[in-house]
Length: 163
Ligand SMILES: C=C(O[C@@H]1C=C(C(=O)O)C=C[C@H]1O)C(=O)O
Image 1: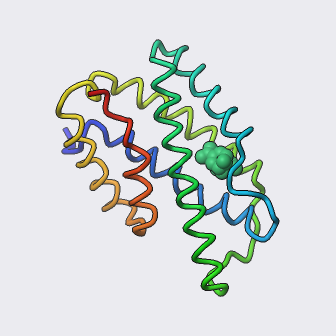
Image 2 (image 1 turned 30 degrees about the horizontal axis):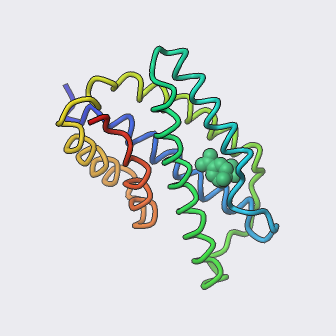
């Protein structure tokens, strides 16, 4: 069997979701659209709660974990906005369609709800913390994100362990 943390899929999907923050930030940059969109956040939370319930998982736990995913996503967006304001030459030159990016986010959300449901038992043991830390390091080495994204990845997983 490959030597990876049982929580690798969770950390990997959380990182994939965070990578979309770059596209979301690029879509909003220079448009006056706020980083925070409470109506969209509510849609995301309601959708993942319904999907979790359908899988026999705890919908409130799905809401908690995705509240953290959303906060982490906004950390990356704010970090990029600050970087682009300080270094305009690093600002994006193309503007993705936010609705298209959100379709990608919806797909990742569904996969992450399933990965969480599939790892309910692992996330319920005292080994969860160390396994989650291992998974974050694995994902960091695979995707070599910058400190902004890795810090946000850690933030996104604070509610992932159930004990
Ligand atoms: C990612 C976005 O930015 C923020 C983060 C969200 C998320 O992580 O799902 C949702 C709405 C916004 O508050 C977005 O607008 O789609």
